[in-house]
Image (tube, rainbow, N blue to C red; front, side, top):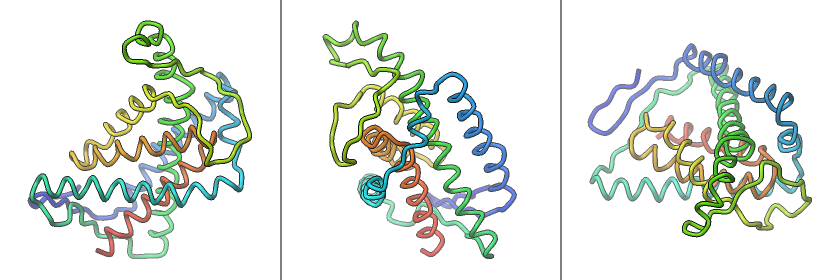
Length: 229
């Protein structure tokens, strides 16, 4: 368990905890959602299968935006709290096996979160359907447009822009941020900013892979920075 000294949290990399999270949370969640897509939501499958070479151009840009947003939020947090020390200190992996396990679990966690919060929750179920029902009542005041359950697959540049369902994007990002409340206020706001960026990347590319890969790379870079700081 992490221990705290002031505002700094201390933790230790534990193989059993990582394996438990990987085998009993991430892998089952991905398997369940894949089964759900095949059974009831076949229109989601192209978002899992489509990955174009142009999407690789979006990944480094997304990682950069995630890092920049996180740094800005952390700077504001430090200024507002007056605390300038490290917020997390973790004893990292020591063996090659532990580093491989960390890398694998990081990308599985990223894919599990992106498939759930972006593909399933944002577009295929729940939030978008709710906003579609509420839009006739709210459009006059909040200007919320309904987001259809299915979206046509259109071949376009990854840098092209199309109108976005801002209501569902914001709500899904807030729910994503709530799952990071255990990291404190800073973790919540950083996750909120990251959720907005990842949702926009997903909707603009029409594929779950660019935000998931960028999410995994960014998390791995954060771990490396914490371990070696």
